[in-house]
Length: 255
View 1: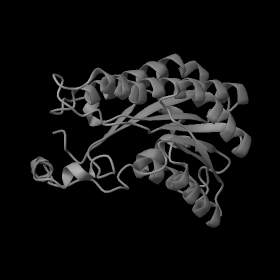
View 2: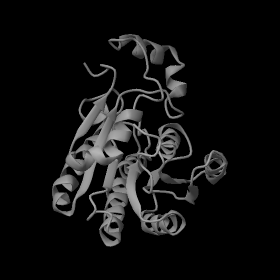
View 3: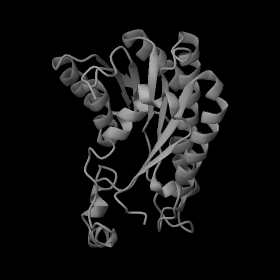
View 4: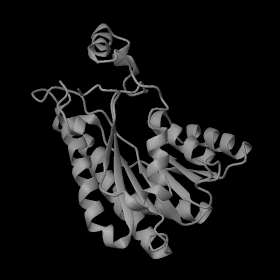
């Protein structure tokens, strides 16, 4: 991998203010991409954009709540105006949707699917439209990467709504890949296992959380950089021949 392997590509990352999304923005920027960091917490975004620019990269902060699906396309237009035609979308924003089915409020179920499924669908569609219109797709540089989960292929206790939403992401990824294959848009997903993030840090600090870690075959959580190489693979030239793939990276946790 060379430092400029994604030079002249523009990436749009949702949920980029912390955790995986923030790391994805840093990795893509380090590889030469121009990065649009999109999230609700704009104070965090501005600080990271300043850091990327200070290191010689190009970045912009985009205020976006993916719950408001009508604003996603406008956010991408804002990113393109600042950085150029969109060529990489990382659909990373997500919520945990934890709770037993008998007690989970319907509003929480709706929120889980609004963020984890509807927003992924809308963002992919809006990105694809722009990739086609700009000629990025015709140049075979269009990349859509959805962040799924091992939860989309197995059942995790107390996470039925979350598992169902991530199963939908897996299906969406394969369906859109097939639909847009003739358009030369590569649509793939990464299905991670447990990586300690803001979303789950409190849980893994508890005794039940520690017990869960001890039940994994390797008795550990994955490092924050576990997905970096898969991200680069699916963002770059190699993905010209990869579409509809779900890459599982879980350190054997689902075995």
